Length: 182
Image (cartoon, rainbow, N blue to C red; front, side):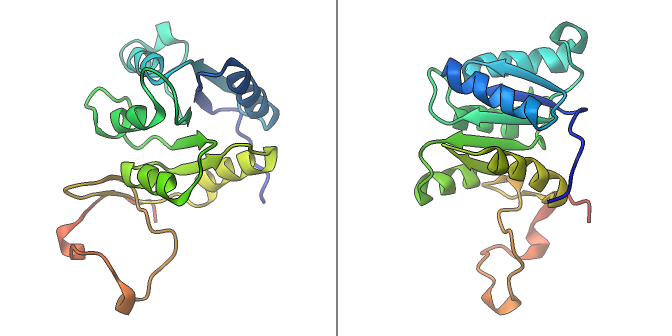
């Protein structure tokens, strides 16, 4: 794993459990993240993201580079926040890397997040290495964004598929790639 300097990153941690929020914030600082903002639920995060878009000087940062969000929170959970970031016209950056953090990491829940446009999934309990792995993965393996009738987010396929095994219903000519840095 390469050694990166994350000190220019502004990360938003959205977690309703004060202890977990503090721990994640501390770990992000420990791996070199420069600025970590926190919110106690998705609604508070949306207000902060609106403030960053409308009045960055008041918010204290010019942009948020990555969101780490717990799944289960009240009243606005991580998946609702993810939908807002990916679909709302008020979102400051629909392409923002979004990492769901959850103690429920079964296939069904990971699939739900994938289909909503999550960038990565981090299962609790996590280690410093797994946290660092998600951050370096964002840098080393960025994914193009795809817009279809029912989906907007990072390309869900992580490995190349032989043409004979292609399972997509749409033809590539029917898709619009929003961003690809390759």
